Image 1 (cartoon, rainbow, N blue to C red):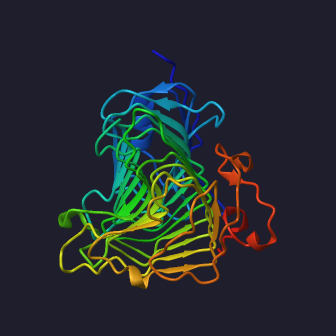
Image 2 (spheres, rainbow, N blue to C red):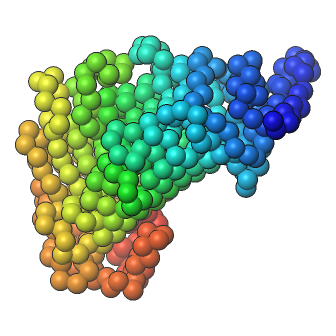
Image 3 (cartoon, rainbow, N blue to C red):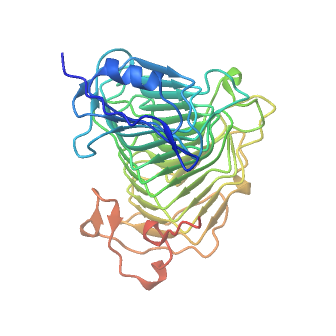
Length: 387
């Protein structure tokens, strides 16, 4: 059995301020024990090596000022979770907790599952994931790399997702969160319905500065179709509301974004390269009469490189309100003999027929080299976070 390392700084008081404990662990049992006794401000360092999953942590909570941190001790040689159950880790009703510098690989159900423990009125708050890699989840069906239900004020930063069944990140009733600087790579043999799905009453989520490459049927599903019993905190009149998608790069996949039974949603300053079928979709998948028609989306200041594979630029489904959508200041860059875009509403100040050759496109980075002054201020390169 691997030796268990344990370095602890005992809680004490210096000038009235509590000093947290730091523990280093080197196997799954030691990790489980350390998390079980963790208090606000504690840091649990995971030594490099293999760890088994199937972990369940309930009610583990720090504070906003002093979160509990669980992280790989060496970011360049992170611990790897594999085996030991259907998912690596389930965090139930945990608050102000950070998970960082770990790899999760090969789980059939979910990679990491985070929820409110079923207490819909009291969401899990202050969860932060940084430098987490989740690989090979599923490979088919409703099995998500990162599953979040009833999680508020969260951050998912600089994480990597490769190969999944349902969604790389699936959100139900999640609010006031940010997904930033992440990479989503589809893999052959994995179903990959969505890279990010926000539904079930999700609201005020920002997705920014991410790379989506061959990331499934809908790289971002702004809304969806949720059983009414699962809406958090309660059923309203939308699946998703006030979602912002900005500064991202999309390469391939069926479509970069779908508005689905959603209210609003702004898609701006993204670079979209060679989607396979649509530039966007407007759909109504929740048919209950309480829900408003999918409406009010804004699509602006994007750079779109497309070819003749696009039969319809925006796929509009029944029961929606496409006339309420706004398109403005987008740059449309055809490859070959692709036609001009046809949109549900007249575009304001759009740029058209900016020709692009395959040599100008970098599919790995999601970039396109266009020396054209009118493109200034458009696409992912021009995105500036207002925060």
